[in-house]
Image (cartoon, rainbow, N blue to C red; front, side):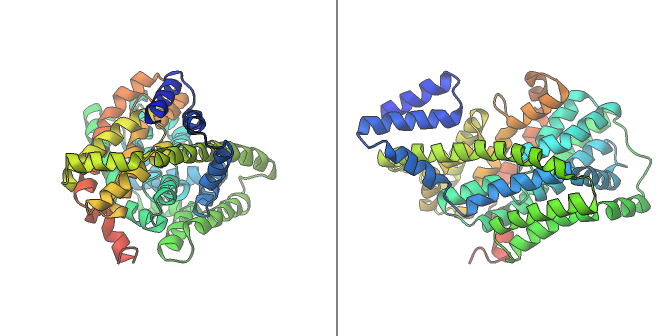
Length: 426
């Protein structure tokens, strides 16, 4: 059965079939061979998405779309530029800061890459920045989206292995800031070398003006993160609050959101949500087949026989995830691998939140590694550049992010200090 599953999966993947259908077809082939009734497929698909925490996914997607259309993105960028625009390469730094702020709203790399990139990349090009540099930076900065909470990927991980989603959110806050700072270090070096422009100088009056204009936009991540980390509401409830807040601010405060915009926004959010939930539901079929054939047990024995050293295990897992992230969609990779790898990590004494966040961070960086880096494709679509050109330019940023990954992997307190302080770890 294992050979049939592997053959079906690889054959469908090489034929270019979408990954969600690859998992469904491979799972169905094994189920037929096992003589199990096909009703199991529908049952497992429904079970895979019948989850209260998973309801946060469509809400966060809708909230991001509403804020992007309602003027929140533009105001966040303006405020970010007032803070760092006076530094050499100011617009590039503003791109990173804007992504860090917007990450506290959307929870999605794709949303950040599209919302921030559609505004920042043309502005940077007009100001004299190389187009491939701008596209690469936008792609890399967007990976902060699922790291600084809230995070759709963390919700999927938490549901997959029954780990506290709130704890994962808390774990991502400090590393998310570290990612932003690491990217800004690279930006500073490149900007000095290429003499990229900067604004006239820091102006407290400008910061005050932009802060006043963007107050309601900046209040969104405060409400979302404060509510979750403060225990006021669950991540799912926070997502629903974010939708209501995004609509009220866009419609009645900024007045850039019209009633006629809502059908298009809901339709686009529905398409994005449908794609994610289809992957999750079919991955659950595949996960049942994997469990039924005791593959997790076999892999666990294989790993534990190879090494009982947690540091070597983490190195092996990171290398595996880097490879997987180059070819597989992040959510699908988590659903497939987390239930297999997390129990092994637990047996080696690795804290579930630490291991879970490490997986999320690694696969988030995978969104800028070719050939299937989804954030690269978004920036390519905005700029018209080839994937090869943007991929070459993004490597310096990817290296900085991998350096942060190494620190997070081998210094657990970076990701665990805040969850412990907030009571997620006893």
